[in-house]
View 1 (cartoon, rainbow, N blue to C red):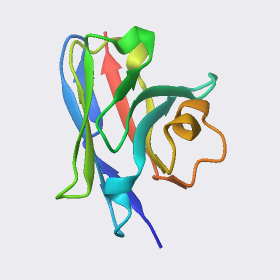
View 2: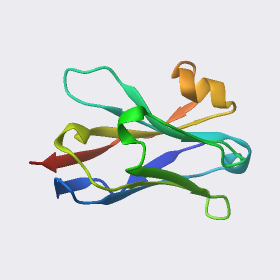
View 3: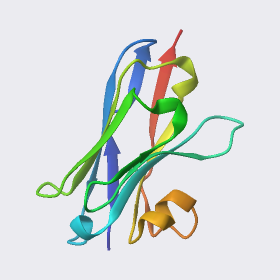
Length: 123
């Protein structure tokens, strides 16, 4: 059974930084695409960033240049470095894992989701 455990969320002032981590159990991590989704109150869930097993990345337009996704296959962990945070980045952030990049980008039929971690950016 694969589990995803996020950490690193919290409260930060606008312009600050946070680094989210997502540790996975199981041996399938290195062969899969990982991603981060977020959902703010009253808004639809949206893809923030994704990274394939070959480290090809995708970013949502509003976070390009501010957020960086990376992975450490030896530690079965994916990271989301968030810089220059804005109040509109406030949301619950979810780590996801799927076999294919297209699945993560589409947001449907994703195999595994983490429990979510709250990120709050104050003005």
